[in-house]
Image 1 (cartoon, helix red, strand yellow):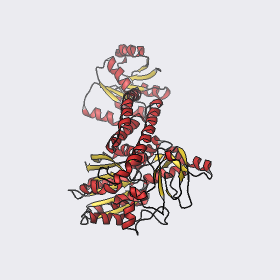
Image 2: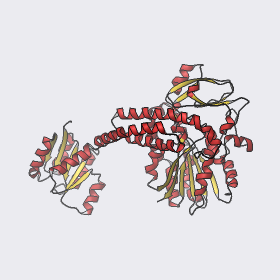
Image 3: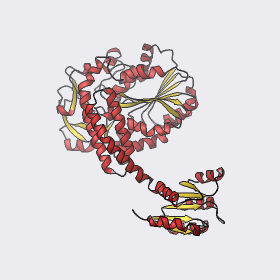
Image 4: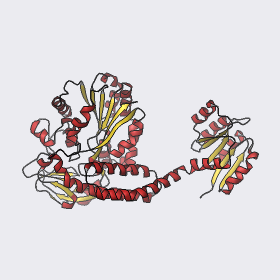
Length: 516
């Protein structure tokens, strides 16, 4: 252990000699001083890891000295030691961002505990987390071998994300690597599970909540009960990203229900989000509403009629009497305008808000060097999402909704995955361009890398042409054409893509919250 430098400020420092000797034997270097003025001079010229500060001193008081210390080096923790338990002193000290406070008389062990709590806290927590994950590792591995239902996969993924977030700030890189390897193995097994079970979900009732059944089964029952409802669909929001922003949302709302539902394939906005609002599979949308549905190779926007789809579904569910409004936010200006005018939505039974920022963030990682740097991995991607959310108009909208007693539902259409490895695919000029799925005729691919649907209608998908096939990339693969292969691979490797099969893309959050 390296030597820790402690500045101890007390006008009766001579009486603390036994404490100082005790700490020095524990490898702490103590710099004693008797006044606030002396402390400030020393603090400016020497480096310290922590300060112990007496509150009641002649001349500069403890609180005055504290203010001076924070002006010089605001990041150094200060522990206030006081004889008084008066509330105003505690409030002043805490407001000045003390790290801890102790009530006199203090014994050496109290001081030692405070040192460990404030200086070794991160290390001790990280070690405990690493130790706990090691114990859990075997359990997760055993569960992974036995998991055979969509409910169990949702539970397992929640566990993996829990440990990923716990280990995120750990200095133990080895533990994080072990977790990453475990998540990769989980994705491999999940892909096999989807390959085997997904077609059956369109043939019988024993199926998870899917994109096209989400509104009927989970959203509709929440609407029109007591309070108006704000449904926020954040495009491309993964479960780990939701857990990252959850604490910010919790300042204004408390979670009533949280679950993971299954995005349909392809895990892409055109398919999944249209399915949410229509309550139909893509095949059914094409059949019943051809003027609203466009296939991959068709010209024009693919999600231009979500409001129309929503209207038709509300009518089908007998909810056409609901006063509802659909709003799509694609830029900062529109978000700010809605935040400023959200009170005008107070009379809506249902306000649907589609927010596109996270999807734009994931795609911009491919194009923009600065985003590549900031979101170089999942940890950075989560951090960037959290930073955006805390400063976004969306948070202001949520605050306004809370004041108006809106129920809040937060969900998404699909997730995304950081792709690492290419898989060669060959197709004709009409083959779709997405990197995680392809549809077209005469596709040539590596069978072990994909889930192939030779009969698209069996999984609720339209056929673009006779004999067309859908293929979905598994795990962290992305499709690359043989032409200009190396350039293509280099450009898209370590970018965020969606459309395929992974825990991150398929298992996505649905959260119901009540206002605080």
